[in-house]
Structure formats: C-alpha cells, structure tokens
Length: 297
Image (cartoon, rainbow, N blue to C red):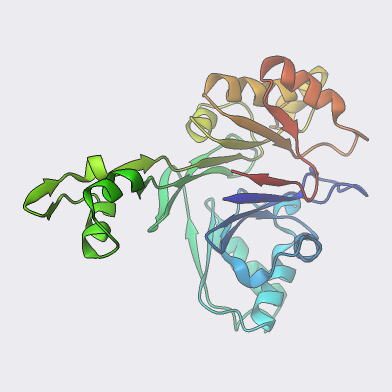
C-alpha cells in the first residue's frame, strides 16, 4: 500500500493546503477517501490518473470533503472510464448524489457507478482487502473508514528447496494453506509456508471524541486523523465537532497504532508545528501531513 495525501485543509483552503482528500494505492488500484475542491488537479500534480480510482469513500457531505466530486467524476466520464466506480458514504449519500447529478445534466450520465450507504461494520470484502466503516460524532451524518489488507501466505523457500518441491501445482496448494503429498510424505502447509500479516489503514474524519474512533484506530499501521485545532482551542473543537492535536494522539496511543498522520487543519494556522509538537508529547510517532506527502505502509 502507498498513501498520497492530496489535501490537508479544513473548511477554507490555503495557498499551501488543499481541501481534504487521500489516495490509497493497492496492487495498481486506487481508493479515494474524500474529494474536496481541487482534488483532481492535485491528482494531476501528483501523477495519479483518475482511471486508477475504483472506490470512493465519502466521510460526509460538507463541501470541504465533496466539492471536488463533480469535476472528478466528469473527467472520469469524459475519458471513457472502464468498469464501475463504487461510491460509499453515510446515510443521505444517494440523495445528495442525485442532486449533484441534476446540477450537471448530461456530464456524468455516461459513468457507470454504484452507491452504497454505510453505517457500522464491513462494507466491502474483496480478494485482498476488507473495508469497514464506523459512524462518527459530527453535526451531519459522518463515517470513518478502516482498510484491512488480508493476511498472505508466503512460501518458506529454504524449506521447500531442502525437500525438493519445485514450482507447480503442489506449490500452489501449499500457498493456499493446503497440506500436500510429496514422495510419499505429507507436507504440512504450516511448515512449508508462513503468514505475512496484512497492513491496516484507518481514516478518522470530522468528529467529536466517540467510541468508534478506537474501532477505526485499533492496531493500525497508519492512522490518518483530523486535527483541526491546537489543544488550547479544545472548547471550540467541542463546539464544532472536531478534534485537537491531543485528541488524535491519545486515540493513537491507546490503540496500538504504529504511525499517526494528522490532517484537516484550520486555515488560522500558517504552520502546524505546534499541533505536531503537542501530539508528539503524547504519541511520538506522529507527523502532520502535508499536501503531496507519500507514505509507504
């Protein structure tokens, strides 16, 4: 997996920070998490083709998370996008999407898409990844997402070479976890292979503190979390249903997260050094994201 942060601003973008959007690449396919204004231009600057997007995960329908959708989908429709783009979002997504379609008559109708409204639990189960969503505590319906790569079984090369098994059907069965017969002996898959744990990426969008944040964050290799305010603005954060630097860091610290990436900063901050400093006092493996930041998972 590789993550490209396309935007790190909250409601008002700045000259350095675009509206929120995150692109995750996995085995040549892309998952776009939120699509703020200017996302497709950010993608072009980052060298990401819209045709790579197979799934779009919308956290909620505030403009700083969705204003880029019409333009991006229009581009996808106008460049003969192949396949069906799957769009996930909280309750109300189908209605909001239809209003958007009516606002841009004809431009998007050639695009094949599926829309699924989500709540808590598994929303996609593919050959390599599972995606889960969890409701967050914002002033309109909002969800966060958790992308889990499935565990993979790898061949213990030294073991199979020692006993003489070469490439072929037996190797394929072992990699599927099946025991095999070779030269009259049973070869156990657990001896001939080993498990590589899948990576986990979590995305906590706009929210007050809530229990579902921990369900998203648990054991994440990378947790991306909104962090709109410094800790001294915690009352304002509470009023507007957002998190502070300390909130995000405490969630990461309490849930065995390996790396925390903070985004969604208020335009009041010319730099986010203070936000990162506050978070790192609680969770040292914290960085503040920036536009076009790339993260290998």
